[in-house]
Length: 308
Ligand code: NDP
Image 1: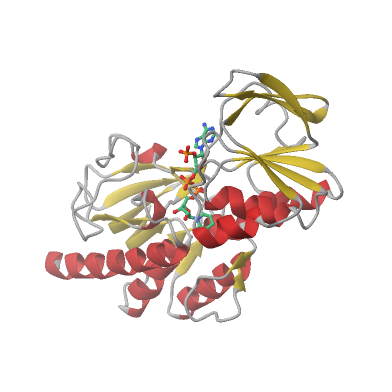
Image 2: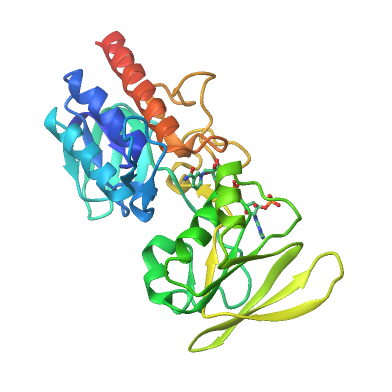
């Protein structure tokens, strides 16, 4: 069993920022990159709101830069996920997906969040055959096709707008008459001639033969059902925190986000810190995640100093 001082679980903006700070504090952090190294930003295209990148930056490029920066100060990267944790003893014990365990004096959880699914018939069946939760990953396959996007938040507007690069027509299904997205993202989508909106509309079933051919929808005002023909179906209805392995190990809130002390990354277990989207159901921005990663590293450093 290998002994580490600080283990960071997850490699999004929160994890990398925690690694940069912990490494510069000479804590030689070990980062477990997880199944989606770089996190959600590797599934996005242009990031226009990362401070300092005046002309915008591609999500995957930004994550590569953060990784390089964290590596420069001595972060060890492990290409594996953590599948189980034991926080009942010190040092803490982490079990790796590829086998083996490591111990860590302090743990920083930065496992982020993942896309939510609707759970309607056909959604699972047609995944990879027209159903997707990532326009950046799959948009390319819908050149000159018609696609449906579900949701009214920033994700849905971003996906819909991105898809117009390829698709000839994008229909956005919104379950109310309001968009939750920020003004600028709304306006961009609303004035795009390739995008149309169906309000008060919920998808009931994804239909197709071998691949998606349409979506059965219902108007929640009138109860009227109809079939929208489509080659693609993109779900953009928010995210769930990646906390499965922490159930019963640290306190989670009702939405399964990790609970933390106010203005702090401290969890219910001393020596275990959490940062980024895994504690944040509200802002969920790369830059807020990065800020909270910095807090986690500083708090871990102080906590370790007190222990010593
Ligand atoms: P949000 O929670 O903001 O929005 C989810 C949307 O999906 C809402 O319109 C919601 O409808 C709808 N929805 C939820 N469940 C269902 C369902 N079962 N059926 C139909 N519709 C459903 O999530 P986002 O992922 O859009 O955004 C999360 C955060 O990330 C936000 O803070 C956002 O600002 C940020 N973000 C920023 C981006 C950027 O700045 N480039 C890009 C993407 C995200 P209702 O409103 O009725 O609840």
